[in-house]
Image (cartoon, rainbow, N blue to C red):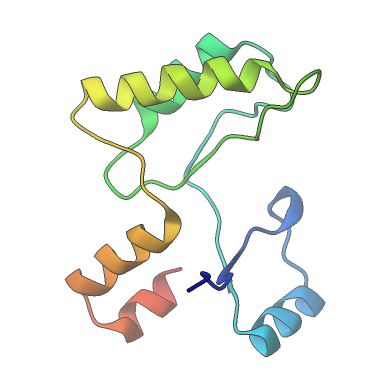
Length: 116
């Protein structure tokens, strides 16, 4: 069964009233991160991975842009370094959907919805 998209990250973190209205109509939840290394600007993959890996906490939402051939290739090293650092700290990356499931298990849904 295909997974339905539930999440939306506003471009540049800017959520307009029109976006909010559309998200509500579509049943989507706006999500932001708490751990970000500005990878479009900082092009040092080792720094990005170490920074994210050091600043992430249990439940953190990390943003790292997708590397492509010839575009943001440094993000691949950033991802490798991040995952290594998380493992060293006894942590692991999980999907946003899994994180939401864990949050629902620990508090009532009404509290969860308002905390996003």
